[in-house]
Image 1 (cartoon, rainbow, N blue to C red):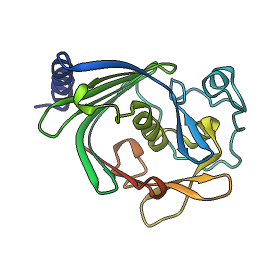
Image 2: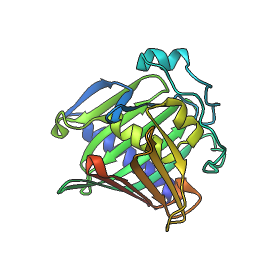
Image 3: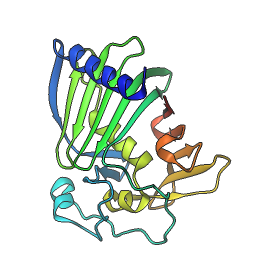
Image 4: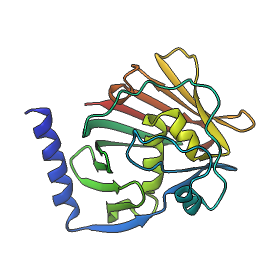
Length: 227
């Protein structure tokens, strides 16, 4: 089976599986990452220039002042995206002693980001759609109220989006590259230089790399492996 056929089968399975036992929720687009640190989902398209300072859209979303663009020019050299980027991934999420695995399909278009998720045995879990302004989550009722779509989207943006764009929508922290034992590392630092998150990549091509993310304060680890 080709990769394209696999992606279509995955999307179809999610749509069918969610049709009978799901709920559609409109989610907020700003999340708290730590004390006095928050992130609002960056708008689309991905290659849109990051704003300098505060923007009206971000002000309305966060109702607080946005930081200026970061100093320095260090940034992951994200290659220009094709019209549509489609990635199949194996995702492992660990929080404390609890561990969860799922198969994820990420579709990124100029004006829409879609993430669908399946349990390892094929049970449909969620479909998340973000148009740059609004985030909707059609999710299995079995996930309960603990599944927060905005946190998953925020983590994915923190992993894949360029540093300068992330920093325009971070409040109380900044992301930067840092030397490490892995091929590439990105860290999230609070304004008082506390390390809040570390992301390691197995390749400079971050979209197709194996990713390991660690947030010690939240006791959270996220591992992504391309399929």
